[in-house]
Length: 405
Image (cartoon, rainbow, N blue to C red; front, side, top):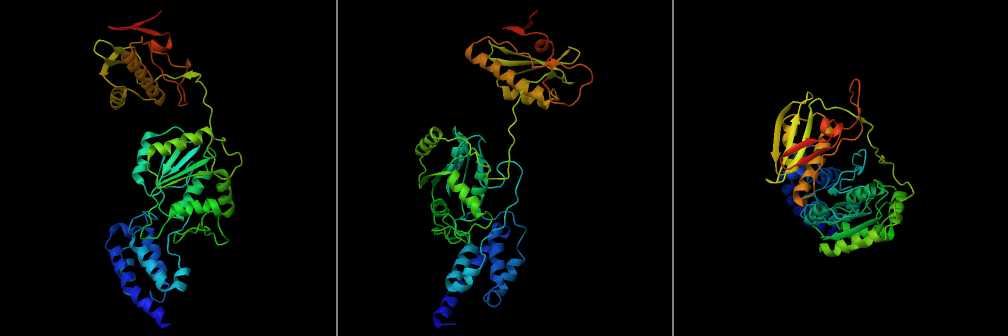
């Protein structure tokens, strides 16, 4: 070993030991894939079998089942230790597998892979990645802009980018990726934003490394090169790295909506989400719990719900100022036993509320479908809402209901 190499090793050793001690003292690291993978990598090195033996053994006793691969911490103790080792021992460091890169468990449906994101709607053409700006992702998710399918953060240039590629490919409706927020260079050395831009510009080399990426570990082990090429063809990247102005981002989303080419026609993923065309129900199944009469009290600006048993006996009257208060109370009291009946009640309460707000007359609508005869089974059908909505429409005055002939 040359003198300069020995000096680098001696200089790096205190840094590595200090960072491993900090990780050992941090409970969040005990269940993180970053620490586990770093310990496993160090144990196979000459330094790990000598000076670091005691520290690695102590950490082994603290490790718990992995709960997350990477939290995107601004200071990642295992990564700083790994970076110091790689700089001191370049030949050994280059061969180490220092980041958790195992393929995550895939789920049925969309998105197939977990991540730090908010799903807004499936049939929308725009995905938004806010990089390290988690609060920006939260604000965009709350606003649920038209045209946005999913919004989330990105912390790593390996597993994080892999999950974006897989999840975006699994939805043929997504044709744009807006890349915004801060791509902060952390002590860990990740540059996910710059790496993602490089992926679009240059693709992967034969070793699955992103060509031109400046992050420390931009290697995509869990996606095939042909998947990456489909991703690059399918998606238009909108580059707004460093931008957190929501008006600017929304402007780009609107532009994407105007130029949306429609769903990607070439299948590029194994995940298929069935699109089911709903039809009007043909059968109307009675709810064993009874039925409701709904009307607005315009003078007191309150919503009224009368509950009747199947024998047409009034057994309860509920009143409140919002639909949520009333349908929650009805559910809590066991006045509903069918989901379709609950959906009907929610719809009618919303219509009655609108009557109070606008002054428009309210007429309780009948449930769709024909009343079922014979034994009642569990097949999906509309609710039974009693004489008021099954044999004719009901009309209302300010003092209460009256059935039309």
